[in-house]
Amino acid sequence: MSETRSSNFECLRILAIILILIMHSYAQANCKENLFNLFVGYVISAIGNIGVSCFVLLSGYFGVKFKMQRFIQLILITTFCTVISFIANHGWLFNISFFDSLIVVLRYKNWFIACYLILMLLSPFINKAMLALSKMEYNRLLIILFVTFSVLPTLFVSYYYTILTDGGKCLTYILFLYIIGRYLSLFYSEKKISKSLCLLSFLSLTILIVMLNVTISYVFHKECRIFSMDCSPLVLFSSLCVFFFFKGLALKSRLVNSIAASVLAVYLLDNLRLYVSDHIFDITLYAESNFFLLYLMVFVIVVFVLGIVIDKIRVFVCGKCENYIIKKL
View 1 (cartoon, rainbow, N blue to C red):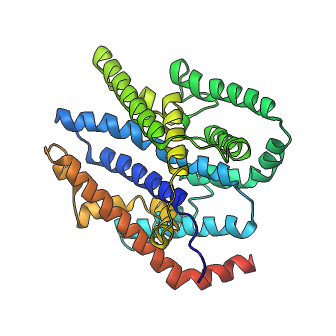
View 2 (spheres, rainbow, N blue to C red; view 1 turned 30 degrees about the horizontal axis):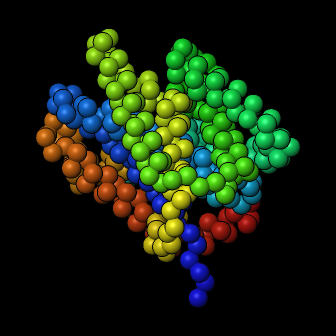
């Protein structure tokens, strides 16, 4: 019997997707009046945005190796999940929107997948360039990128109209995170940091992010989430704390590994939240409830499990067909 591979980073992948689902589900609930639930939104924003960062840090740590089969497979999975989400939410309507879902990749409709596909194309060149740098040169590069793509956009720059767009939801920041991940792999693969220190640092950073955002919102009478943007230095440091926490775990689980294999599909099936809300559990009905947080967790679990089940069915039913298409292309 083959030995089960380590599951610590697989757990992190699962956590990353769940955090993204929680953040999106909270936004869908649209809380407006309950002060506690509004405060919960600030906490979710502070924690949720580390999801993508952790996912890309992991990609950088292990290194993306461009393979045409994997590239095509990701396009097929993205198209499949987009079509399934469309049918679930709108039925069998063969209109312009349906055909639009077939070319979601070409139109960059999913920002993360579009960026990740481009990252895959660029990865051979990035990996080779990073190996050519000394540690000191790498340090200087990271300082320049950190100031340019994290500090300045957070403190001074309008993040919608610069080389860094939408608070870090763009290719520029994804590449920055990937380069950090490569750095950790090249120079800190054996580095161990106390899990207690990582956890304490993460909690401290989360509290700081929430306090800054709430304070600015109160002073200027306008909702502020500046310090919980993807590109925020505080979110970046939080992501690194979580990364090193899971790096230090010793965990092996076939179940965890099996679930982790489907987390990208869960992310791509994110719009199933609309189906769940319409047909199973309407989260918007509890937006002002004092038990909203509990309802939110149940809602996220339902969406997550549904996504896992659909992906496992996809692999079972379409796996051979998918492999055939990949080989022919």
